[in-house]
Length: 331
Image (tube, rainbow, N blue to C red; front, top):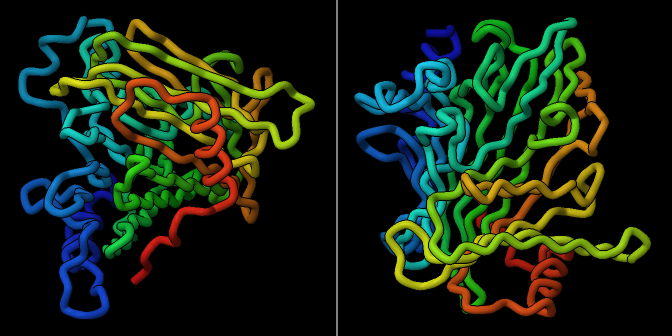
């Protein structure tokens, strides 16, 4: 157990137990609180779960290793700092954790397979050499319109030396006639010396990673306007009947134009299934430096779906990039 993990166990009782007060006596509709059994952060609306943010370390399930091929067991490591499960409008589970084929895949997570520091290479994506650990600095707020999680983590080299400071902000908006929007903002900064991030081989996966649960009648979609279009709109979507569901559900992803290298190259692996907007651009490495933060912003859009036309996707993109959603409730 690292020093940071030992500190977290006691500190989280203070940081996570209270739910921020909302003006008046009315109970908040969208709540971020701590699961009394696991200590993980659960966001719900009117008592129905929306997502779980696994801030604390999650150990492999009992008897899980026996189901994994011996050559892959090195990837079945305890993990933290990711979203799973993410739920659909009817309680469907949209994401997958602890898959037998890729033990390191973990719902929705932000990680890179090539993390270079001091001439060495770690793999945050596959939980090798470098791993994100909680610092116990986490703030939760709840309200009528949204719930907010702000969580600090450190990337530890060999689970010991801090190399990157990370802050993840997750804002879960109240569901409406359009569906549900979840906004993700990530900030990364080198603790001291430079750290370089890249996709696998600089041209495959890496960035905002989305491992989906099994989907019946699946469609994975991506659209990006031509390079010379202003503003250039882009989006990705996954459609189909999800685990535990009976009707099609869409989980779409939008990016902020302020993200470096916008729009990210699109990657999909239907056989898993998996899709994502990647970062950084193909053939490049993004260098994190002390005193200069990298900020990446995304929106997830979840809704029942039969067919979403292009006009609707464009309106959703515009709303996100114009910040038209109601401002999140703050403590």
